[in-house]
Image 1: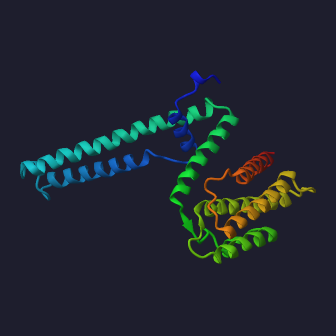
Image 2: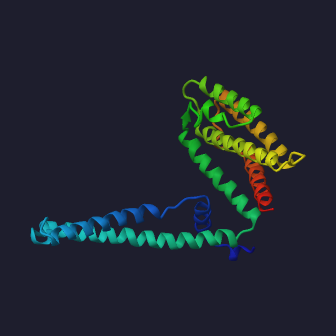
Length: 249
């Protein structure tokens, strides 16, 4: 793709965020909807005589009514425009870039986000899950994540960075996916374990060791290049795609 044909960076980033589940137009639409419902309720109350018409009680109340109406209409308009732009950006994200370009942009965006988190130096001493959440995992993964939980529980102030906490949650989801696909393989009576599950098991083990080292060292990893985590996400995607293909057959 030539540089002159590349859409604006903010369009691509908006499409990337929408693809990732962000819905930035919901707050203005929600605010406008609440304002509209309030306005309809107030109109009903005034027409039924249960509430005095603000326009007849003084110029101050009349001004408030105008401001309220303009603000409500403005939020609805902004929300609708944002929705249309977001849909357009989402389509552009998938059509204007190749898969490699999307992957590179995701990595670049993540690095900027992690750099911002590193500047804030957020710290935490707890993970998003406990040993009770490991019951549905395989024995080996239950032990590995159990060691991670135990190490995190021993961390004192200031704790470890929030990037480790977030990545630990992704690790748990990967372990759950491995367990789910393994059970499906058994149900389908496959004689050999799919190679992608073997690869996924290896990446889970490597990621666990990486996060365990980060927890024990207490070093902030927000600004690092998260190569290991990217490999884990890539293998999870391929495993899920292969599973969907198998279900279709």
